[in-house]
Image 1: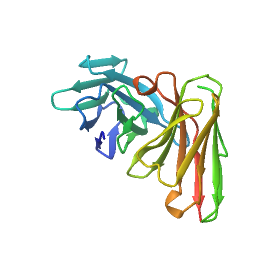
Image 2 (image 1 turned 60 degrees about the vertical axis):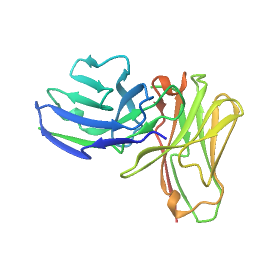
Image 3 (image 1 turned 30 degrees about the vertical axis):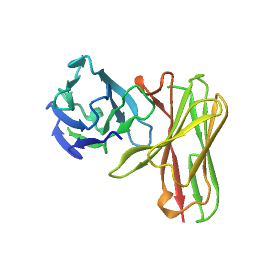
Image 4 (image 1 turned 45 degrees about the vertical axis):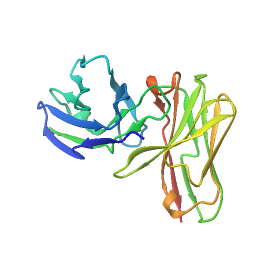
Length: 111
Length: 113
């Protein structure tokens, strides 16, 4: 089955700096790549997603890039703010119900 | 927030006892999922449902069973709880399976002692 690896496991940045989280996947048939943000005591919530027919997608301060050849995708957060502090998960699926998640990245934005 | 309610939110149970967790949705979504979340492992799929009475196994299904008798309810049962099943359990729903956004519940923290 699909295997998703996520790095780094923890990331600390200064407010205003950029943060980058990277994921790799194993199944070349995967075609949907969402990113979820999980705040303390809550369930994960989708922040951005990308499909395999697109190389990059941006939503305000958040962007995701996808390299299908290398089978990796990344989350970029610019101008980080303290409220961006959370655990972020990447995931991959291929038009079925078996969405596999990375192990998560704990992002801390220091004021 | 998507209309997903998990119950109970917290539970402590003894090894060997059966436990049932409930997920209730008001969105009429076809797909429902149970995940467990453990440090260092992210979210791992236990079971999912693609319709009433239609369920399938995920990657960590051993020791768990599920039932879905109504569109809005998806039950997860630990047949005989073990300490390795101590975890946070999340229910999720989706309108179109693994092709679009999944909405997660608030989670159930289960401790098996």
